[in-house]
Length: 103
Image (cartoon, rainbow, N blue to C red; front, side, top):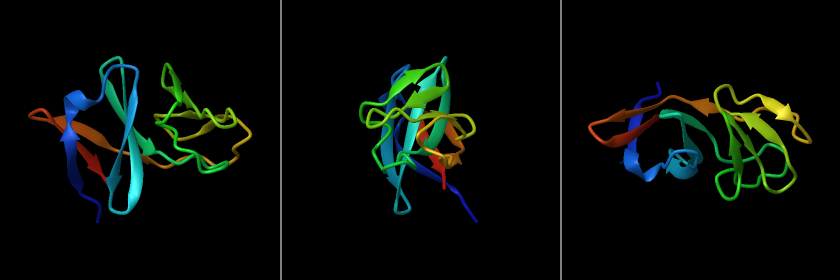
């Protein structure tokens, strides 16, 4: 059963940015958009580039800088290829200034 894991301080995630954290052997990115936190796999399903490193966030989508695949950070769905597989998403919450990811 998945449980929430503290990965850092919530203020590490600036508005409109993403940062990756290692959780249970995987890299999970967290972004903040309009104050809401979104957790998703940091690894693009097209060519395994890191989404948080140079990925461009627009609204609740993130575009991989490597080949331009765009994913919906709320659902993981592919919005624009070349990727054809979605990224996994993860519940994220903020508690007492701490950032927690369920994985």
